[in-house]
Length: 131
Image (cartoon, rainbow, N blue to C red; front, top):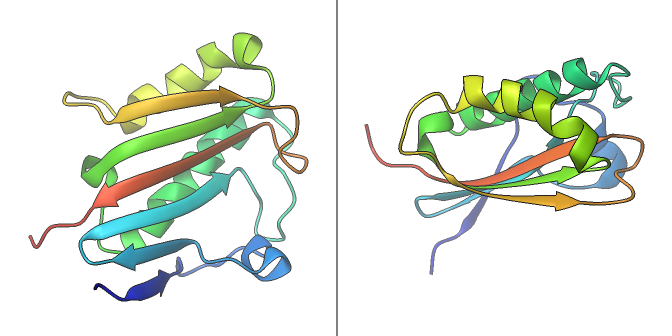
């Protein structure tokens, strides 16, 4: 059975320590990335929604990089939204830059009422293959 390896980006934000979780866990060739939010280094939310979404994708990119992966390795995406109908155009704009060509990963979007002060969260599963 594969072991678990904790993955953290070079610049860990305060939320990992405050809430006691790993940025990602690698098990075999799978990478399970915890929900990434648009947090500043001190763990506070970026107040502007578009900037918060962009920062969440940047934080995700840093976790993937720490594991030796890229957006091209992502096979599964789950996003959480506090106001999906209003937020979707902004989210789609940022998402289309990260996933710019087919084949796209599968994607599940979930409307929620609370994200600990954030309005958007993205979690992914990636398959890491030897390059």
